[in-house]
Image 1 (cartoon, rainbow, N blue to C red):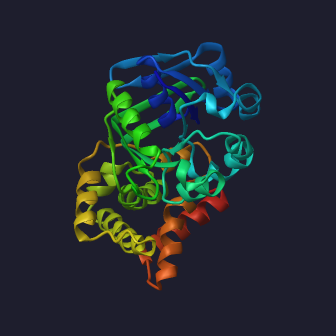
Image 2: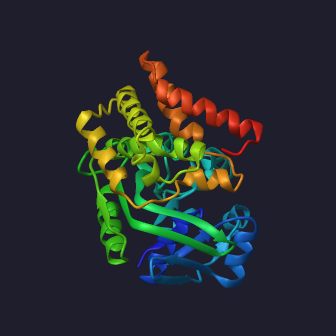
Length: 319
């Protein structure tokens, strides 16, 4: 049995936490506001396909968490927050995490979270990860809806090193435990490569969906929008070279085929736009544009969609 801390019990973190709790692992959740109060009063409820999962795990705000627990009481800390919350949450919890040696696994969008985490606790405690083919959001306080295959890919960040790396045995334990809990999980030796492949999809559909209000299937099967999706994905492939990942044409076509055949889902950025929440624009399109500038190459599709969406967000307009 593992003892796990899930920082961010929203659509993604809530689903995985409920699965792990149901399998008998001890899970502690963090949340805030009305969602936190509902978790404390009634527990977490997750709708997934035809299942109705219930999780009565302890839930706290970050201040209470720090006061009640030592970080090394946990076998693993998972972060499932929006990428734009990574810096603020580490400002709150960084000093606490540095008191211990517990590894931290990011399950977030983008390619910049792991470097930020490693900058606080060290690369030797940092695990990279991504949630694959899952959509999820908070329907109301205490209630999460999730859909999709809901896989996890994880690995030593930035890539597998020496065989004696202390993270290696833990990753094997996590892989077995997560799979036993009904979460299809694999460990990769090159998590940076996998993170960039996911960013190819995220940059292809997230900003454009928030701009147009369309789901992933509508975008990828539209005669014109599919060209923009493919163009933004191609620009992400080129941007990966700035990090030494060097994705190629095969990665582009595989990712485009994957998102084109996936369920018709609202992207996380579209859900945030509809709910008036800050968008993960900087960690998705912004990450691509920064690296394209570094490489001295143009990214006209990403530049245009990013500018239009940033303007709409700043103006308080509905896309």
